[in-house]
Length: 167
Image (cartoon, rainbow, N blue to C red):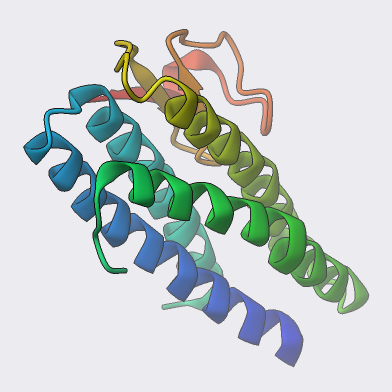
């Protein structure tokens, strides 16, 4: 593994691990504020970020909580930045260094992060309605499906048996 890819894997791990923990805190705040559906969303995406952190850490070998709307805004903007800025650069550098496994991990995470941004955007539009939906997380790549358990993951192709429902 090249030096840049190692550094990027570490930075990606730290970012995903931070997001995992931050989103759990956001879920608790949403629960306190009476938004159980938003809390479910934060827990689902947190689980997905944990998958990414675990994937990056395996390859390595080793926020401030505000109100729910601000947390959703922050999460939406963060996902857009991660999938639009950081992961494309990480993918490019991993490919240049011939690190196919890292490039694949980065690519899957990038694609899933785009989906997270859409879920947050949807939650922002429907915050006052607090619509009820279950979330299913792919254990392989972290893809989150809202309301429907997919037959196969649209990002990595994992079968539905490899998804779990978050609460």
